[in-house]
Image (cartoon, rainbow, N blue to C red):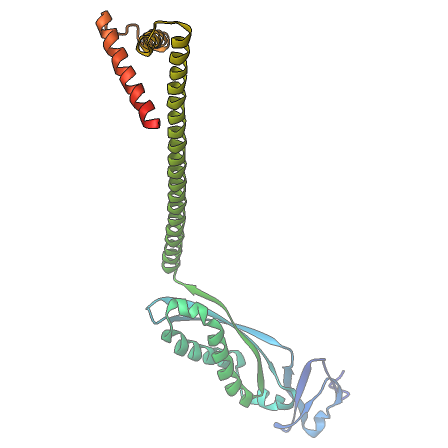
Length: 286
């Protein structure tokens, strides 16, 4: 019916290309337009002004000879004031954009190592956008944004990269564990040294107390029992302690037999040795 009444409708965000006798005449904006077909006027086609997106997957090789698939996302649209150029100059806009993307990516990525490719993907996207903007503006298209959305190495390369990363993390963990063990050993050694030092002080004080106690006992016994000498009292005390010690060893030991000297002379020798040691200790303390 619209053709019979010479009226056409152009939808929103769309322009129509009007020709007269096969020659471009004007760009029709959205709305209703009169198109007298009997005077040679006709619609050649429509052109969308909406933002469009094209995802391009490009396989290339890095500087360190790793094949990667680079996925670029191109957002573009036709310019309303250059609609006739966008409509007539390009027969396949998407193929043209894809060719430029391939050209820039395959010129940029081979200059970079794999790690640098991941780090400099924004620079690659910028190079693609600049090249596309320069080329497509002549055809009536605007490049709104270019993104490198994925860089995918070969599966074997990805597995190797993951193994390298895992090994590096394990090495760091091992270093941290070794450092922790080193600190524990240092603290344990410091604790043992402090414990031995305190134990030594305790033993020294214990021996000093024994010497002081024996001295007081000898002096007190000599005063209370006339006619006894310090040597007699010391021999008696030492013999008593000797037998007390043997009793405690027999009670506390897990052995069923304890071999000790059985003669009185042996007891006298032991008493002499203990007495000489205690008197020397007392002399040094004075």
